[in-house]
Each structure stands twice: as C-alpha cells, then as structure tokens.
Image (tube, rainbow, N blue to C red; front, side, top):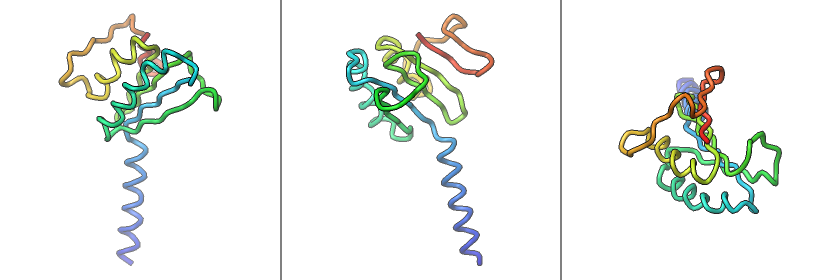
Length: 125
C-alpha cells in the first residue's frame, strides 16, 4: 500500500513541476526573413538553456493570436510573462530573460516598454 502512495505522490510532483516550468514559445513563419534571422539564436539558446522548455510554432500550420512574427512569449516559473517581437528585440532581450538578468549586461525595462498592469506582463517592441 505504501508503494501505491509513493507512486501517486511521485506522479503529482512530476506533473506539478511541468506546470510551473519556464517556457519559451517561438512563433515563426517559414517565409519570414526576420524569423530566419533569429532562428539560429533560438536554436542555440534552446541547447544552452536546457532547463527551459522551448516550443516552436509555425503560424502557417495553426491559428495563433500573435501580433506578428517572429514573436516570442517567455513565461518564467514564477509566472512572469514577457512578449518579444521582431528581429531586433528578440536578440536584445531574450537571453537576459533566460539568464534571469544575473550575469549579462542587459537593458532595463521602463513604463514605455509596454508593461500591462492588468495582465502583469511586458510587451517589448
């Protein structure tokens, strides 16, 4: 009987860990030159930051509510959400977020960068 309880607790811990994992969602189009320019960076970061879940979404194969491509949504384990768009902003901000801005010389955000107090998220352009 104890084994059954340990198994149930183990499954719960694994599922809970997945729910609160840090995630990068990359929305792109195969015909977009800006997407192609940032894709090597995204692939490189996905190999470097293995504790992050990277998801790649081809917008031509699904219906996604994004405001253009390339578009990235970063969701941290503490549920902070930052949206990055474009081939300038993604390289500028993405690794800082993945590295939690601890060791990189990263730009800081200001109110003009697009903080939405209702959703408690940033939209960087």
